[in-house]
Image 1 (tube, helix red, strand yellow):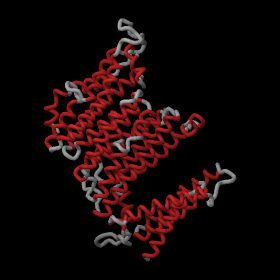
Image 2 (cartoon, chains in turn green, blue):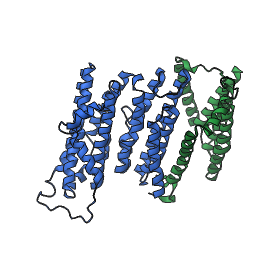
Image 3 (cartoon, each protein chain N blue to C red):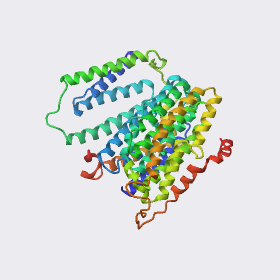
Image 4 (cartoon, one colour):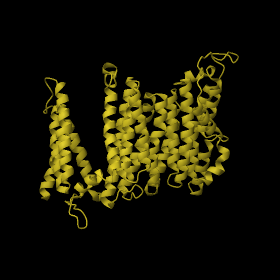
Length: 173
Length: 346
C-alpha cells in the first residue's frame, strides 16, 4: 500500500513536470489529467473518498472539458511538440527545483508522508469528509453562502474583464 | 464602468474585508482575502489602458501567491497542531511563511516592487482603495498572530521598508507613485511596533488611513496626477491646495499635526523596550520621506510660476461640495491635542 502511494506521488510529480515543460497547451493538458488523477488517488489513500470523487468530477469532467473545447476553437495547425531542446531545458529546471525542495524539506518534520486514515469519532463510524459535507449544508451554511458568492464573483469578474470585444481588457494589450 | 458590475465589486470588497477581519478560522480568513483580490481586479482594469491591464495582472499574481502561502502556512500548522485557530499559530515554519505572505500582501520590502506600479496603473480612487481598504485584512491577520512571529524578522522588514520607501520616493514625479512609497514607509513604522504594542499598530494604521484618504481625495478633486499639474492647480481651488500642504506635512510626521502622534508614541514604546538604536534609525530614515513630502507641499502652495499671485481664480461653473474631504482634512491636521484621550483608549 505504501509503495502504491509513493508510486502515485511520483506519477503526480511527473504529471506536473509535463505541465511545467509543456511546449503548447494541448500537450500540457495531458500532464494536468495525469496529475489530477494521481492527486485524487492520493486523497483516497488518505481516507477522504468523497472529496476525491468531487475533485475528479468537477476538475476533469468540468473544467478540463471546458478548457479543451475552448482551446480547440483557437488551435493552431502545427503546435510545437515535446522533443525541442527548449522543452528539455524547462524539464531540467523543474526537476532541479523539486530536488532542492525535497533536500531542504527533509530537514523539517512535516514531509514524512504517513498513511493516516481518519474515521469519525466516538460511536459514529462515518467518514469525516461525508459528515463534513453534511455540516457544510446544515450548520455551516454561512460558509456555504460565502463560498458560493466567491465562485459567482469569479464568474462576474471574468465576464467584466472580457466584456467589450475590441474595447475590452484582453484586446487592449 | 457598468453600474451592476461596480455594485457587485463594491459589495464584495466590503464583504471580503468583513469576513477576514471577523474570522477565527484560517480557511475563512483566506476566503475573505481571495474575495477581496477578485473583487478589485475589474476596478483596477477599469480604464482598459495597457498600463492598467499590466497593473491588474501584477496585482493578481502577487496577491494570489501570497494567499497560497497563507494557505500553506495554515495547513502546516493544522497538520502539526491539529487546530485552525488564527491566534494559535505555533509551528515555526508556519510563522515564517505567514510573515513572508503578509509582507507580500502589504507590499513590505523586499516584496514591494509591485506596489508603485499597480498604484500608477489605477485611477486615484482605486489607488486609495488599494492603499487603505486592501491593507486592513492582512494587518488584521498580522495583529492576531503578532505574539508568535519572529521579532528580528519584523524589525528587519520594518527598517528596510522605511529605508526603501523614503529613498525610492525621492526621484518620483508622479503623485500616485509618491503616495505608494509613502505607504511603504508608513507600513514600515506599523510593522516596527507590532511585537511590542499591537495597539500602536492599530492607531498608526487608522491615522495613516485618515491622512492618506485626505490626500487621495483632495488630489482626485483637482485631478492632479503629477508634480507639474500640482504646480498650476492652485488657481482652481486655492483653499484645497493649502489644506493639501497641511495634510502632507501631517503625513510626514511634523509636530503640531496629527501625523506626529503615531511616530511619537512608537518612539516612546521602542525606547521603553530598550530598542533606542532602532528608534533612532527609523526616525532618521523618515527624514528621506520628509523631503518628498516637503517637495509636494511646496509644489502645492507655490504661487509664482506661471501665474502671478494677483491672477484671478479660474472660473468654474460647477463648484462641487466635498464633505468627506473636509471632514478627513480636519481630522488629519487637528487630532494631536487629543492624544491623551486616544492613549487611554488603546
